[in-house]
Image (cartoon, rainbow, N blue to C red; front, top):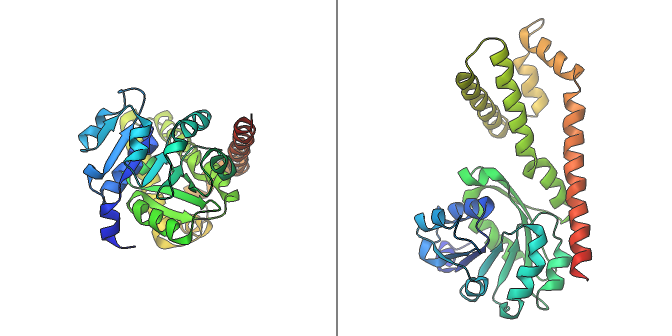
Length: 280
């Protein structure tokens, strides 16, 4: 994608939460200028941090749409129909509408938007705030391959960006959207184990966070399967295999798989509700 094209694009955000802020930071670290970005939210509470980045803010969703080429709809899922009903008459064939609302399907988006609108469903995660996100998107029926390439170009500084079928979006929500919380829970438990053994809490949490970071980077950069790296840490009769045995006795593997399954099913349930709500 031509960097010059990125720099000329007008980008809008409806919603000013963490996902919008993380994506905005990533986009600005690329070729998009702050002067070409605008954010709307009903309250001024979260707008200050966008202003610190040089981004214009407003309380008007319509103003954002009319001044943008790409619009990120970053509101709570139950608010998506209200927002799209408000802006729909201002959406034209030059717009790309990107929804980051969990569970809101492409069918729902396309039903609420004008006919032939370019809609894309995107699921980011919280580490977008530090440009280490995992983002998966699916294109709607009127979004072309070049629309996907443009979105990927805009988001590449946010972290890993992949495209897939819409059926994978809910799975990605369970794996990565919710998965970061599962990792935080494990990091918390690691630190509390160290505190139990006598280490000061602040130090234990610092080391736990670095352990998670280092393990993640090695896993990503080495290209090795997690099981291979795990086996490389274990020595016969050593400390690690004893600890792993305890984790297996506690069912950590099955519990983690079930957590991803539960979060995925909840995302699917939200999608069914959003579809039913849009047809009322």
